[in-house]
Length: 252
Image (cartoon, rainbow, N blue to C red; front, side):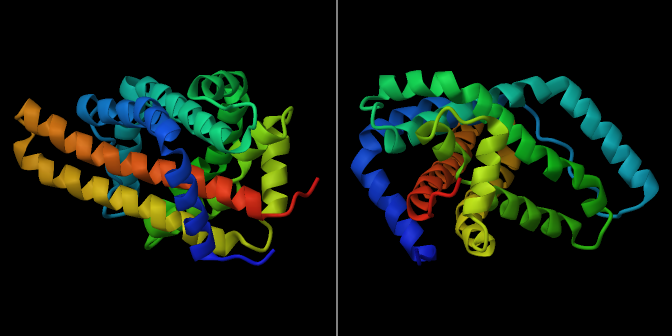
């Protein structure tokens, strides 16, 4: 089936318009609220060093390890809640038995562990590239491109786990990889607009907030705007995954 960038965004927008009454509470409760809490309460992770040398990388690694030890559990919890919300939203779209928000949440609850495992299996290879990428000129940009490409090749996982259950984590990754073969760059460009756009808006908003960080009310408002941008990106990615799943041929 032939389709392109605009087709997927048109399909995703149609899904949103049709089902936003069911999607909004799921995205708000499981994606927006955890992200807002993390932005308000958890300090930002240490930034990668601008000068790449042994001493700078060693200092960055030590600082990042300490940050993970202090705050990593909160991010894992937020990640898990976001995955649950994504799975429930996907269930609304691809599971005929999930006619209500409650049913979608119930079905997502039974599948979230395998989706969590599949997501970890996708994130792990990308995390192994962080060190080598930062040692290269423009390494952060290269790492971002690789991560978006990986996400594009595995963007069908949630839909496969919900619509074709019982499907294990590894099987879902394999099926997504097969069905997106030959379309990786196109799908990566589709996801990049949503992900990079959301992250860019959130990053810009949080930078604006730095001079007023002492005001809890202002920080809450600014963090809410940033969390909204990131939630919009996450929601768009989920609906784009459903749109791609419906258009790509079923391969076993």
